[in-house]
Image (cartoon, rainbow, N blue to C red; front, side):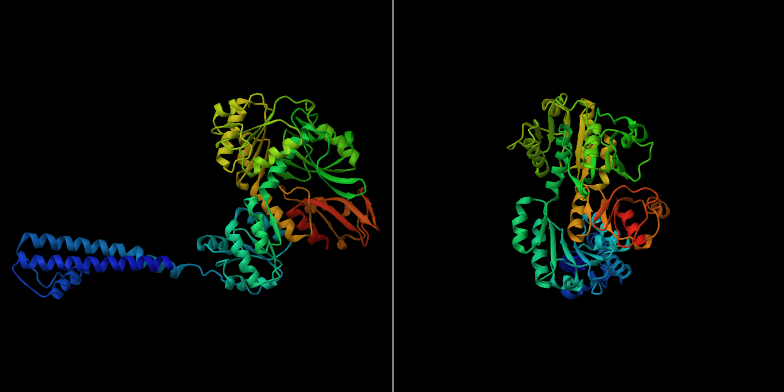
Length: 543
């Protein structure tokens, strides 16, 4: 509406100026060409009559060609001004009359999460909250965005998140938490406003630049998340574990029983075989719970699933079993492996990768479009000559960490063309571009938006243990009162929910050997692994 008012002011001002200008010229023309002197207001009357098409002018007809031409020009000008009024007055009024009325308050909510504002990472967070039946409301200042969200079924309020009235209108005082995610500087303002609206509410913020973390904390944020750093660490972890015999991070379920994710590397004993042909269970003793195939999670994976380079297995077993499987999934040529690691992009993600590589004593070369400290080769990161200069033909791995998914996709194609055997790891800015980068030839893609959303959900919910921030997979300890007295076979949990029962804690002891005849008892704590949706189905069905 403010835009409409501004346009109206401009239009009326222009109209008055044109009226007065034409009236002065007309008054002069009548005196000079028609030899008729008249009061100025009569000249203004003629101009108004002509422009509004309510008459052809009180002085008609005119004798001289000059005045007739001038009157024709006034006629055309009047038509133009009438049509110009349509987008200024008529169209906005019709749009306003027909537009959907957006909610500006949500005072009936309680124990909810207030999200300021809607971003790509908010999609993951909302999905997580919905899977746990946690209410939320998005505070969105942009009306068009808020309208799209409202019509798509989101819980949304149109308002300014930097306004105390808006935050009070979504019952911030009764909320579980507030998420500030509108940009580093704006987030600080939102936090200060939130502290005024509800002093004790828990506030979580997302920072793009780690240097800004201190200012968020000074503003009153309870927890500051830096997803770019985690993305860099996760990408580096894929490289460092490829040249190490050590098992990566794992979630400990009980004494000497863990769940972990393992990558199938190029040249490993598993690469190129189906899950059935690999004989993982027989050779290692570990169980495969699920698998990420080119970014898509499958649980349980089909026996015909081909284990290609970049496949990530979600496995459970004792430490010795997981270490045995890690050896099978690791490259047989890893020690020593030829070549170095190319890190394309030296922003926050890229510098985190290089720090991890340096700590692991792995040689690397940094490529960036800007000549700055830490950059070894400066130039267009998608130019074949730049990558050749950096030694891509001899490299074993290239990591694309730039924030432009289009450049990452093109660079992946160039890298594959220059070195078909190279391992390509990539950071995706948007979750929707992950599959595109896999099609371009990437072996492993990590979406910043997904990581951010997972970090937020894990921080806010405080009820789940996440095996990996970049994947929507949870390991949850819960009860199963509806299954008491039934056997594992009778419940048919995997088919009905998509979850896998990993272990059962009974009388302080963790039971991991779960056959089809295993029966649930009252008081059992069931440990299940699965996607957000499947875990949600399990908790609904079992309790």
